[in-house]
Image (cartoon, rainbow, N blue to C red; front, side):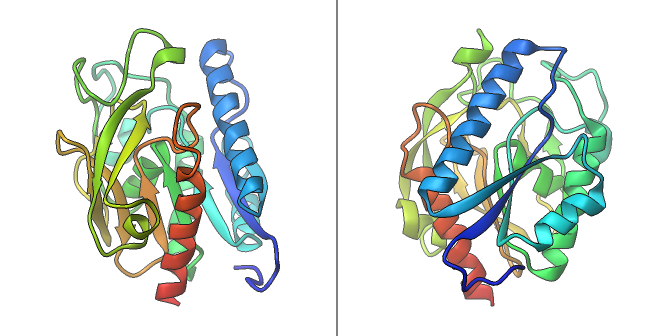
Length: 247
């Protein structure tokens, strides 16, 4: 990890790709989300560095992670099911980027080994979970409270989340928060070392931390257009506090 005494810390924002010819509308939504992550990173006093896993070799990604103060795995498409022992053909199956998935997962494992802080948003939580040996629920069903399926631009839904007391995320956000979600998958079995710290009303795990590494991830989108603007900097703060507590 880079020198934490610097006034401006670097956040590596690890995205999937900036080219989605298969769905231009989805690409536009993803660009807007990434832009808000970049903006809120800067407003929080960090320097953002965006890297796309689909087009960047894993050694280059890892080199950027080593030079950063934290790594953020951003949201996006479904994780390739073969990477966690599932099969294609499930309900509401999305597009897959297995090469990007595998690269992101490898970087997560390396960061955990050396103690580089890792944060995750939505799919980022799922990538972290699968990287550490966990599985996913492939589809939460058409009546899920976590996504509106009508159009991609209206996919985000608001719902409450309860955060367990006694962890940096609860300290930063409180124990009851309202979140913006847009996902149809969720954690099935937990990855090694991960423990759940937040839940939706239907029992879906909404946030995890690692027992011995500076890893924290949320299933919702703190960078969503209608999300509380305090949530993204709170996630950075919580991740930083977790890293300090474990150092």
